Image (cartoon, rainbow, N blue to C red; front, side, top):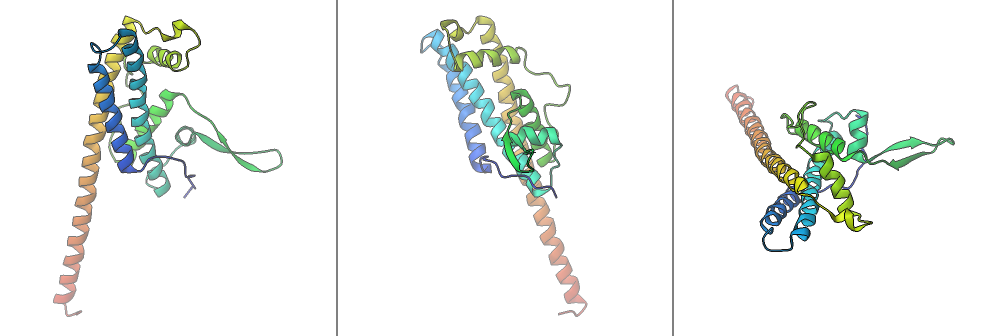
Length: 214
């Protein structure tokens, strides 16, 4: 089994709680629109939106990597590089070093959800041809400007962007619901498997006793 390096990811409970917290923050930020300055609210929406996305990715990525380390999930090189945010590289002198390499956010989202789904033995909501929320790339560009402003115009979030943000918010809500449902189904399957195993062991013991093995 190939060695999967340990990288910093949240444990299951922490990752799930972080996701729920930041999705709740996003919901509350939406509700703030009439309570604070409109320009401030628009910037906060962008920041809160991508914080929620990052939390979902972090949880899914952690579960996918845990599956890879346990040998239950097989990661192709490109997915492994994206989820590990780097790779081992050999220098001219033969020394092997770890090099950090960040993939595009959309690639990281796609791979995290795809291999998270494999870890949970279910289907991912982001198949190869599944559409992204309308305007995702544009809003991602706005996020970069709002987060790293260099001019006043970098803080502009247009009416069009706000409409796009609302569509992405719904997408995030659907993702969070999907994760919650499949986490519970996975737990139920594991519990059922444990119960079945225990029952079979009891039956084997009873057969052995009936045959005089005791």
